[in-house]
Image 1 (cartoon, rainbow over the protein chains, first blue to last red):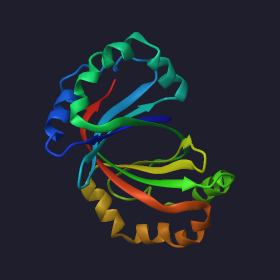
Image 2: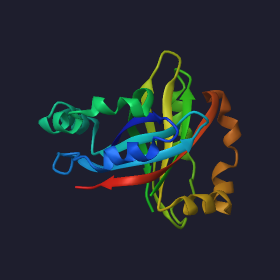
Image 3: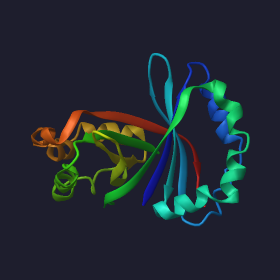
Length: 104
Length: 104
């Protein structure tokens, strides 16, 4: 299991607009090999921003990397630069490899 | 869906010891209502640390909060203070609420 997260600091008052951008786009993920689940996550609210994270679970790091080189990736990110006014600084990418899993 | 993450900065060379602490303890999570899945995640390596995150998926924020008040929580964290030498600074907690989900 591999988790790909992008952290976004959203200016106060822009939360709804930011969520709308995600909910109204087509992620083109459903058919991608190794894709397990995507969630847009709303995190803690700070003085100057609300933290959001795009959070995608992949079967493996290799599946994630293959997706970043695919046409589906290109389509999903076309026009993403238009949304920059909604967030502070740059989105921060972090990739995580699972080293231990516990299930019920 | 609610994601509870604790971020740990692990001093270079202490990665294996840190993973061992997690793998050798009993999380007491399996029977907790609303618990979905736990992963210990290894993130990017920086100059002065490797980022790790404990990553637990819960059915809801309410289930997570009920767990923090439970005997299972107390048992899982007994002795956690002993591991402080392995990490830089304090673990940083972030709770995330899902606002959008995509599945295959």
